[in-house]
Length: 213
Image (cartoon, rainbow, N blue to C red; front, side):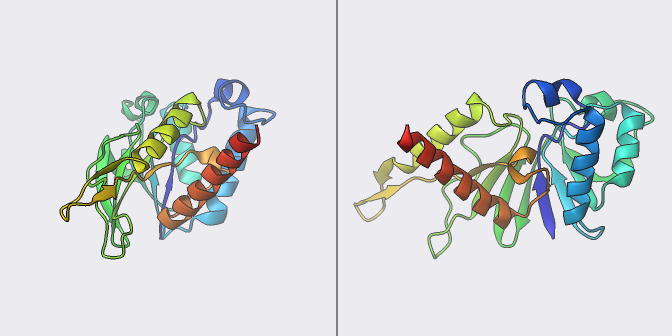
C-alpha cells in the first residue's frame, strides 16, 4: 500500500503553539503522538510519500526520527527540509528517492506530487471512460490557512466553467487538487482513495458551515 502525508513539521515548537495551534503541551508530546499515529497505520512493507516539511530538526534529530517511522519512505522536498538534507551526517539512504517534484501512478491513476500546490497541473482534465478523473494533484505547504481557502474557491470556479466540446456542445472543466496536510488526517498517512474521500467530506462540512452563516 502507498500512503501520502504533508507538513508534519516534527520538532517545530513554534508551529505547534502559533501557526497551526496544534494544542500539544510540548513539541516532545507532539512528536510522540505523530510517531504513534504513523506507526498505527504504516507497516514496514508500505510506501509513504512525504510531500515536504517533514522535520524542523537537525540531521541527528531527523535521523533518529526516521529510525522510528515504519515504511519505505520517499520525499518531495519542502521549503523547510534543507536544514537536515544539506548535512553530511544525514542518512539520505533512508529515502527511496528525494525529488522536488514527481509524477507517479497509483492504481491506474496519475498523481502529480509537489510540496507547493499547482493550479494548472499536468493531466488536469483527463478522465477515463466512466468520466472519472485520471489525474490528482497532491500537495502541502499551505496547511489549513487562507491560502487553502483560496485554492478551494479556485477549484469551485474551475468546476463551474464550461468550454466547447468536439460535438458542438459544452463540457465542464475539472480540478482535483488534494491538500495532504497531516492535521486533516489526525497525523496519519493515507492512501489516495482515503485522501479523496476525506477531502470530499471536509469540503462538504466547510460548505455546510458557510451556508449556515
